[in-house]
Length: 423
Image 1 (cartoon, rainbow, N blue to C red):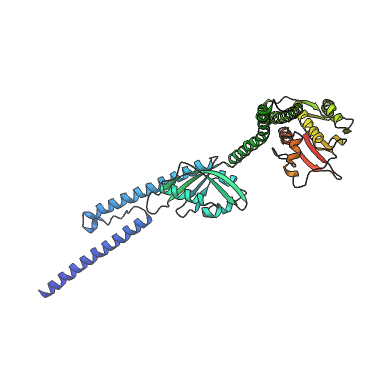
Image 2 (image 1 turned 90 degrees about the vertical axis):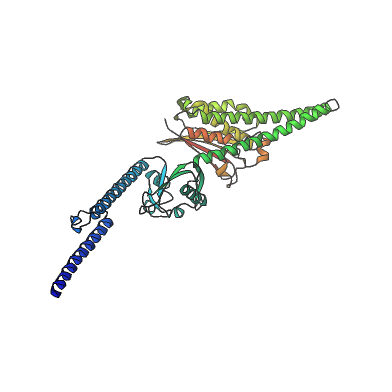
């Protein structure tokens, strides 16, 4: 009897040990399948003798399949997103949770090619590439879902500045193991900001230029209105001359503004034709002969025997020559010499207008073609200058795909040279 009990106990122990080993292997294999995210296909489940084991296996397999499908779907979505971003004209970045760049499209690489090397984009933190606390603030707000629709941000690198309009979206994550992603879209608005700044500066300059003559006119008109009966005729005449001078100054300014606006807004409407430069120069000088003679200016023409032809708008090119000669008349002493010459090479026609006046300080030379820039403001206004003459010259030459420059002449004087493509 005792032997039978001992044998029975041994059999029970062996059965329990076998079931324990089966359960242990089952759990081990199940854990490995979960880690590998693969279906558990073992047929040993039913051998464990529990109806719950196949159910558990089925549930886990279904979870693994759903997770696999979800990951495939996410990978497919990311691939589609990358394909879309790659073909966008705007720059785009995808960031991870620590603001590390994991993807940058071609538009962003091209836009910032002078700032960052292609190999340095992926893997870098956003704040390393772009110095802007506003950008980081915007990214944090996007992650919190509190960012405005777009934000205008100035990006700095050394002494360079770029303006972008940034919008974005928090892509989030589909499961605890995936990365938390954020999408940023960059719209380049540097040129727009520059135009806005130039527009504000232009309006301020025009207001300033008009305010001075208007103030003078108002003062003289008020004086004439109050003291007209008691004022001597000679003083009345003096006041009227002052009024006429300032009205002419305003008129010249408005005409130059209209001319500059017309030049910049009618590029497609220019009247192109074949223009002979030497003949055009002689025609312009004939129209200004009285003014030249009135200032006692002598001419030194350096025009070659051969004709130089360019494809241009003759009236606007004539305006360039008139402005340059007019400047020479205004800002050189009487009885000065004005030299005008032309030449050509295989590609370009060159025209220069040179006076023997006082020249321009070297520090001012790079700015003489800016709107409203004057070297001697008081003297320029006294001579009736608007500060727009050389700006008009520069714009017209640029529209003709040419170039213009100014340089001081040894011994005194200023030389303005412009070049145009040959016919």
